Length: 439
Image (cartoon, rainbow, N blue to C red; front, side):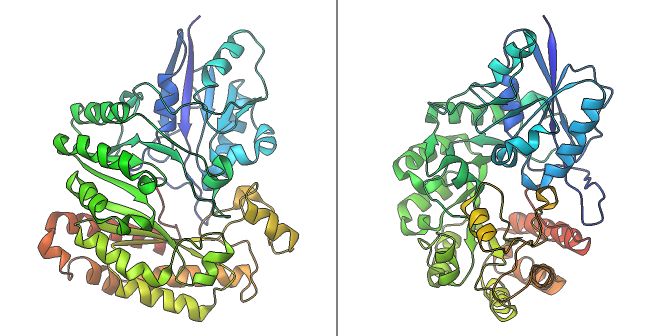
């Protein structure tokens, strides 16, 4: 029996309801190349990256697999509905779907909840036998998998790097985080040999960079030391995200930088310690952020940041101070998200009990639009402050200040020019009211 799955990575709708399309997609998801590598005998796979390609609704694939993160949920729903009309078997998965599986099931035949490595083969066999289950869920015993099917994406209009996973989950339990809700403090690591195998393969394809997918690379210093030791001889450049505690381990920070890491993204969230305490992230100390940023920069690594707008302590005045903090900092690419009560998270339960959720339309949730009323601002006011903050920090003056007219231009001219371009892309998106994001 020969069957084919078409995996689709959906794009998002902008604030005008138009599809966000780009000429090139830099952040390619790893889930679909991985699942394609785990298909049983007799199954083949194709991939569609909705942001840079048209959806092939006339495909000869027997089965459609749709994934994606939360803000692509509405687009995923629309794609699923259309393929169902055409008689295809449709299944969905991903973090958002895993938190609201019953809702997702309304639009497809089956939902994969949580990790899918252990269930993709079972789903395929059940399709063959005509006994597809409505839900599939089986936690991983060990984070180990074959070489992902990178060949499904390398000929597409993607960026100059590919993703490689080191760990999954996170030991922290922030109340707003979908990762925390799904993994509940559990963190798993792959064998270093597997990680290095994938990196070497990416290099053999002609890539000089990779994205290390891990929600907190600093959570196991000894593991990270050894991984860096094996990455260094490969002479690859890489990026990842990390907790601020890496600044407390100078030797590890040095090893990370010397292995080729040139940018780390930090979830700073807020500069008010009371705000972090309310979302169970009081293990971060905002007063220490300047030291953290300096330590990372001094090691030769650029800092990207993610911060939340719409926490209980936020006011127009506090967000003004946030803008001033970013302007004075060495952050090369600041990003912001409106606090969103994703169903299934502790935050959602808290806000629902307090009657503070302004909209229950989960499919409309997006990082650029608040749906929470806080003690100091309404959801609409938060959204207005969000865009005000972004427009200020991505003014031409501020972009030039942190890139071309910055001392980093003398130290790392090519890298700085790259981030200058990234900043201009973000500015263009902000002018169109599209939140800069993982795409």
